[in-house]
Structure formats: structure tokens, C-alpha cells
Length: 65
Image (cartoon, rainbow, N blue to C red; front, side, top):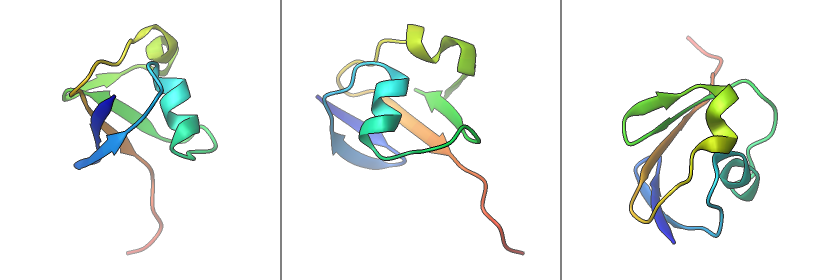
């Protein structure tokens, strides 16, 4: 299925947020996820089923100044 991930089209097999993060190579736990402009609480990540065309934003902290 094709999702928009951080503004870019991505062909993925994952249908749940934890699987998507693993497929995309995200490691650790310090980031936030929004699906279709709604922030999803970490406790609900496994409950959200992604659908064709969804827009997913993964926000990670960055150092710098």
C-alpha cells in the first residue's frame, strides 16, 4: 500500500504503526506519530489500522541550535 510518510510517498506492507516504524527502520522510543494530522498516543499505536493514502508523520528529536 502507498502511504505518505513525512511528506514523501512510501510503498509499505505494514498496516499498524509499530510495524510501519520497524519497516522504515525507526529504533528506540523517543518520537511521536501523527496519522492524517492527528497525534496518536503511543498506547494506541497497535490499535490504529493504516489505510491506503494515509498521511503519517514521524517526529524525532534532533540536536542542534
